[in-house]
Length: 153
Image 1 (cartoon, one colour):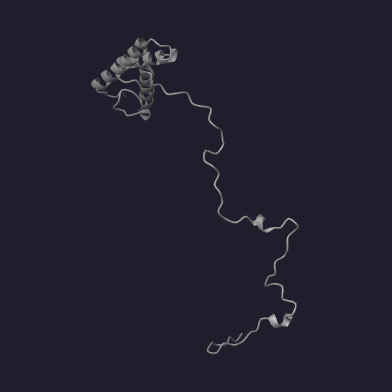
Image 2: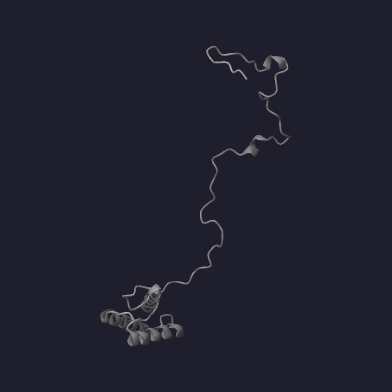
């Protein structure tokens, strides 16, 4: 099954290829010249466009109405930028897995700030009764609330 590609789109893609190749040749500087791979890439695209009208066959690779696939168009754009001297810079080594932002300062209390250097002291709590109060005085007392039905089990 062959796709029907508009001839205007095919010719437009061929002109882009030719302009990119010519711009790279006319630049005269070594950093703007095409590498061997880029030259082969442009040649193979040109050959496929002239033969088939499209440079790709798999419809999953790009818009079926276009002459170049999405990846081919991106690479061609990179070659055009390189020929103009606006090539992307190589990726830096980066900083690895280090944090890009300063560490977040916690606004909560640190539990270790409450401990003295000599050792922990147990703060007086409600669980331990004061020495002057008898333990019986603190026992729970149950009483019947008026107006509630009593349960007979």
